[in-house]
Image (cartoon, rainbow, N blue to C red):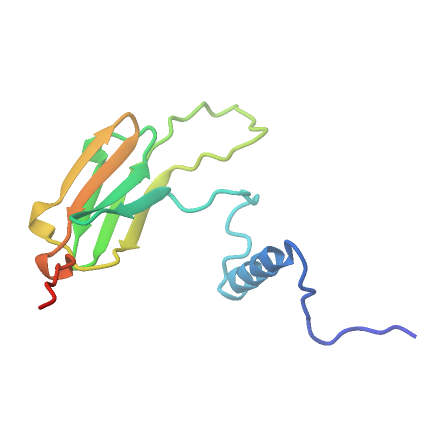
Length: 152
């Protein structure tokens, strides 16, 4: 007798939660027509650009890895509590008769929106791009800064 499980039931163990998320992502790609878009699967491509978001009492700091990009190839905008970074990453062609053994670097346009934890003063935002690292200093709005209250 062959027993077939009618529904998928995950086994929850170490690492299986990530396997379950990957299985669900693949299934959503298949349902949305994303299946077969690329002739191969790029493992570990992730989100570009990778960022760190930190804060002190006056500012939020966003640091993003932007290797191979120039400052004039980036577009940065800030709203009340969102930062948007977009641009185009170009990778030089290596020729027509080149056979790849591994291809993990992707080219193309990108856009990333980062939600900020509080309101910001969009008029005073500064950005620097040095050695492939984009640093954006975003001052907090006066209403978002902590206020010291005196107890009487």
